[in-house]
Image (cartoon, rainbow, N blue to C red; front, side, top):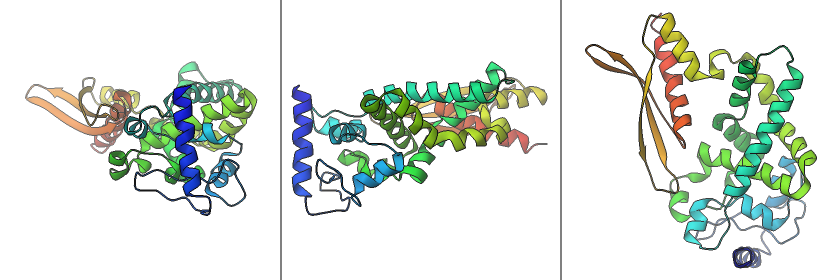
Length: 273
């Protein structure tokens, strides 16, 4: 209850500061000031919800847009991580049932690759930028804001999942399913033509085998603050005279970094033909 009251007080303060302003602005703390408790046509909150295609109550919307760096600087403030966790599960369910029904002749492996690409960080960050234009609404801590956090793929991806989670909390699975279809159906259609991009790690291993090479290995490193680690992966081929680095990639998780490195490495080997 204390956490909820703190966040409501914080939101109330921002609303009072912005009652006469119909545009999104950041104050000195990097906090987006949202218009009053009830959205109205033309205000920034309504524009976001129109793009999402649903309604979300102000408190829940603020939570879905609050990054951990902001709650770290403002103890007691809820961030989007729980909603992201929920939204990720909803997104996987809806994308799975869609692919399963639409492609009855595909194998489990093919379906899994298509789903992974359609709900990847790359795909969801594109949804955040191109469909929702959500970057200006994200509540960031001072340091994360200075580092351009509202344009980071990892954060934009998380926000999309959190908004889906918030929709589920507010309206249930049917409305959440409708929002997911609105956001990713065109991406699901596109991945049918992706070829090796459906799974860069598997595609890299297959290409290496076709060229008579050993399995690529991934050497990992991690940097950045605890609340926002950055993983770096090096896709390496082991040779008698030393290791050969084929590609280097980074991401907000080990898997995302490895996929980024594998993509670069695949193109490096493909160019040798």
